[in-house]
Image 1 (cartoon, rainbow, N blue to C red):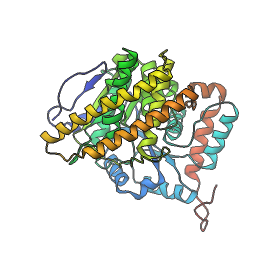
Image 2: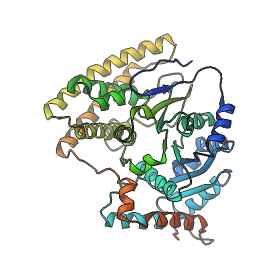
Image 3: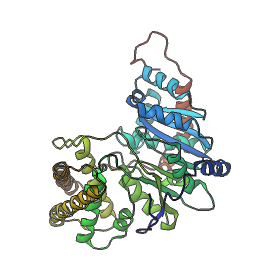
Length: 415
């Protein structure tokens, strides 16, 4: 059962009372006539082999208010792209796949790089950026929603609650972040519980009150991958190309939106998706890689706000974080006990030790290069550098949509 408490500086829209999905969808169909809605779905080809995406499509097939669905398909060969087109044909909406690894999109990326435009590295950030560009190029949707393709517990209510605050013109929100409870027979969401929140609060202790830290700490699940925004934000927001995506997006929203135009919505009583391995010994994979990228993104965004992060302060941060994380473990253990949930203190401490290593690695990387990997350029800059870019993106996506590999060609054949 949700509470109704408003915490922090970001409006919280709770789940209260009885389910109201039918009424929400009826209102969204009406609002979508004024504010057409696009859904961006970043997906690796491998997700097509898993049951989560099948369940998502079953639910989306019942949604009548979406104007278009744009799938940003990554790590797909030519034959896999063709199979993916067939796979998504079951949806009743207008569906297009942005084949990120296809030769037409790759040619566009090379051309932009030649103009000095930062297009990022292959990954979720670049895929989302390309999909946003396609939605902007078509100019047929005023609201853009995004969620992942690995949500095992997906229900169409998630999407309705995510879109409603932005699509309803009477509410006036420009950005809505989803949040939810990550609980099964135990507590999940280790990166948020044991890393992100203790890190933000530890930084606040060391650098004093900072509006950006207050803003980030106001989100109940800052690392959730679901959000909806007005199309204008897709024009001006820059996007990180690494695991710092969610933090970077929130930092851009903080810069570009008035606080009263930002909200977070409770999407579900329970939420389950694919779990990442801790990878405590591999700084290039799993949750360790995630916390390194998140830390760097947080440090760089604070530096851009004029906060001086010295070597001494960042060394102190590790000790402050460790104390805050151990206190968080105690609180969550007590929370698990009163709810009769499983709780493994050893695993929780192991995660904190890995996250502490991640902070150390991020500190070294930040001090060596405070700017780090450039963020992907926003579409406003891209259009100024390449005025015909939208026509080229639409043409590439439509030609890929119409193209069929010759029969008998292997999986690596290209158009």
